[in-house]
Image (cartoon, rainbow, N blue to C red; front, side, top):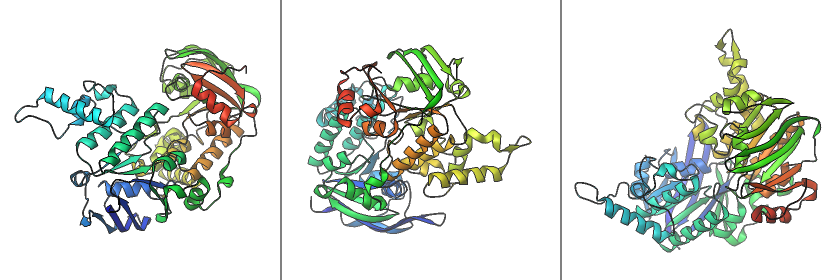
Amino acid sequence: MNAPLVEIRALEKEFSGTRVLKKVNLDFLRGEVHGLLGENGAGKSTLIKIMTGVYSPSAGEIRLEGRPVKIASPLDAHKHGLGAVYQDAELVSSFTVAQNVVLGNELGRVTIDQKRMRKEAEGILREIGIDIDVNRLASSLSAAEMQLVTLATLFHRKYKLIILDEPTARLSGTEVELLFKIMQRFREQGITIVYISHRLNEIKRVCDRVTILRGGVVSATLRGDEITEDKVTELMIDRSRSDLETYNEGVSRGEIVLDVRNLSTANLAPLSFSLKQGEVLGITGPVGGGMEQVEMALGGIASYSGEVRIKGKLVRISNPTSARSAGIALIPEDRRKQALFPNLSLADNVCMPVLKSLERLGLLMTSRKAAYAEETIDRLTVKPKLPLMPIKYFSGGNQQKAVIGKWMSAKADVYVFVEPTSGVDVGAIKEIYDIILRMAQEGAAVIVISSSVKEILSLAEKVFVIHDSELTYTAAKKTCTYDQLLAVSMKGREKKAA
């Protein structure tokens, strides 16, 4: 593990006069797991997109196995054995798992030998420990299964370096353990893994070394045993971790904004609760255990039975449009697919919900749109400050800020946040928490649905745990401890009256 597989030398990248990478130097050793950390906007996304051929560098070079290489396209990266698995991993949806795994390396001279292809795919999945039927269509896979199958495709194609971008964001505890076992098998094969995550407990567990970026430069490279939360936080943002703590003291007051009675879906047992102005409800539990059904019902994504009242008025939510009309704003976890138009600019995305207010005599005023976008970008400290750049080129955390920013002036009575800091760095987490609490202080009722117990305890006044499709625990936040709530959310056994 001593020889560098990939060396990055004096790498720079500039967008419209803004330098987002500044003479970056680092190397990735053969067969190591190398963590890559940094604030959103620090340059991580730009760096990995240069390594995988999405961007070309403005200056500097990449050396592979001691030789300079030019990576001008994703095809070039593929030929050199460099690949990535992103949070929103996608396969050919109309193909089977087997067809996706062997895509580009199909067996057969004239026609594809389907039987041999399935056997080949089964062997690959078995070798790395993935138990998925190779005859299933990719369109039927969960987000977690899609990530695992994408890993299998890169393993089959003999990639030398694989970038994992927030790989556990949508995985259950069991799936996380499976991923770590697969990573160990990759290491044994000499494959280098670049591991990008904001979950420091994972970084400490799986990484041999960690490189931290700050403001487009390398802040430090640490060994795994040198990593502490305090050290990493200060290297990332030049602030102590204590400065980033958030605690909701409670700002709820008189009027009931949201009243839910016997809300149920095909995967959620009847649930009743009410929220006052300024009140924040935290809902946690295992991924896939049912907490997501609250979001889907109130957001108009899943049909439900029961009653929902907003400020005393009975509403019926049949689709996302009716949810918005009723006064509910949903900020979903899957921001790229559910909350953004990736090919439109940052400004276009931020202004989408308030376009009517930016019109004059039926015409959209460009100056008003630009001013609104600039104000939102400044308020949320989106980096880089390039409102006309397509949103798909921003980091996950900055995309999340844009999604939240859309609703800051488009007032809603109820905000539903789902995993609001998934893939977001420690500095931006504090900023997003402050925005959520500001919305509550301005009189909205807020629901935060998150698998992070720490997040729930930072934001909520009262806490629900949903496990196996049922509400298994309710409590005021002030009566909860971290260890207690974590144990309940994992086991789903303890019950307590509200």
